[in-house]
Image 1: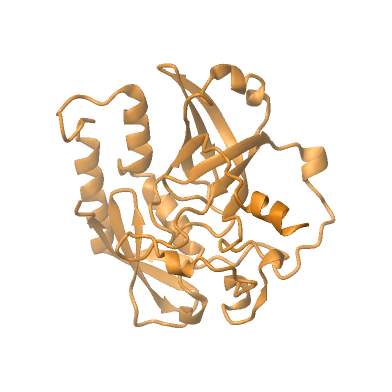
Image 2: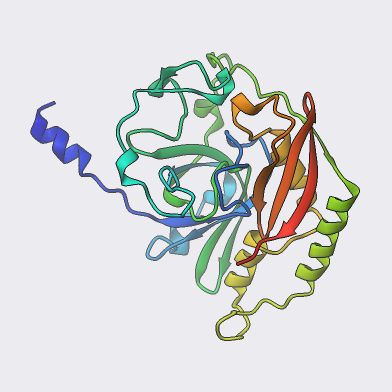
Length: 282
């Protein structure tokens, strides 16, 4: 390819057709692969791509492919983008290999890719047409909240599922950790559930009641439900801690889920314990 063609290729921009609305707003805690945790979330389609005609026939498919953008790749602790660290990384250190062994980026599913594009198969729970807008309710996504959606295609089992495929350094799902909860953390969680479920869905700025779509998304993103504890435990069971910290029993880690920060730590090998659940101060 000539340098001119390469330059044209580098300048291609795909449209954003929607956004992912989910309980997880930070990378820490997000599943490293799709379908490891059956977490419910929503894809909110944007105009003009939210035309109901564009989704006729989709309800016949149980799963869909999602192309999306790793939009948090270079966002630092101050929530600003670090433009100095966008160079091409030819090698990465997959957590599955302990975080020490390097392999080629194209032999991995690392988020640090030249295109910063992700690809996931998720379960399509249902399609909702609300007030002229399209919401795709999905489960099993490995995307965080506000992830830009680039494309959607149906999953076709006869061609997409390769039964005898070889999976290199990741031949099977990771071993899960056991997750326990202290009595005080459970009480904290239940107290916040009671508060959240008694809140009216209103706009903080105007006091007006939210519309149906906004209320639905609010429940996915913020409202804490009793069933969320199962989801929290399933996420922590994946052990999102850095590979080099797997034997660290001294450090506490915090995962943000919906409106709460969940603190957990390792108490013994493959045994993690939730110690605190506190409401996020906004």
